[in-house]
Length: 434
Image (cartoon, rainbow, N blue to C red; front, side):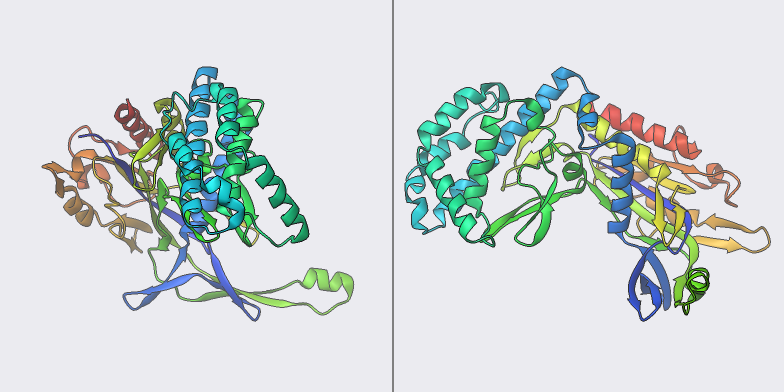
């Protein structure tokens, strides 16, 4: 069966990874209740940030350096895909917005709805970047009032700085920008990733999953006043990292005594909640949606070449073993001590909430409840058990388990060190995308 998703459940050891509200001078950890106990957690947004930061710092995603690293032929394919999708989706948004407006200034443009529909039906071959001069001539012919409309709108903006472009003007501006750019580098990467619009910080209209790695991996929402938001769901799905040991509400008391003594002032006391524990979270990567853009009905309309898809998913797999969390002057290591998962023909986070640990005071070691995991391996989808696709990686010497003996996985499935686990998963992804 064709692989549809990667799912990995990670266990790591950390302390106090995510704070919430500060009450008075007390910084409280994010926490949830379960089975009559309190457990600290690191939000999925915090893990998403650390993953994005690693990809940005180590791989330069969404910068010119990232795109300079690929072949010219591959780059042209990505430019054409992004160019096609942006103009087509802009025309669709334009048609819908014009159909719903009664604003008189759009009267001439509204009479061109049939021409907008013709633009929507253009093929990827017709809407190629190399054809932009011809397309620009067509655009000027089909929408002759556009420049006058743009000029009037700009004058209105000068009179009222708080006025925001509506979806009609925004769509036209972006289409015009693409048709008049001088080089491919003005298409990919997009000129801006984020901007503040309608007092909301969100992705720029030029962003899509083809031209922006962040938008592809983590999804986007682009709102327009009075219109439905343009959304693209995340390919990389993260669960919160929840502690595997209950909180005992340990507290650190401190002051800025050194600064106070040096300035002759009174010190300012503070308190931090602390919790040192093993944590677990799950990453699920939808391979069937990776590097793809869809229309409003969910139909795939544009797609990246396989080489770029593989590059993006391998970056994520390379990042997970090296994630850290910087909080309150500390750096916490989120590197896996245990990881289980693989590449599956069904999209399901099989091991969320299924990894439980116990601590042996006599040996000073933890152990994973492998009986729970073995029962999951027996689940079958279209006659294929989950265990067939599952691998396991662990840090030797940390666990009391003999995983090779205890885990009832088929012969040949990887059970060993963390690096070997991620290499095996990357190999299977590569085969699945071929």
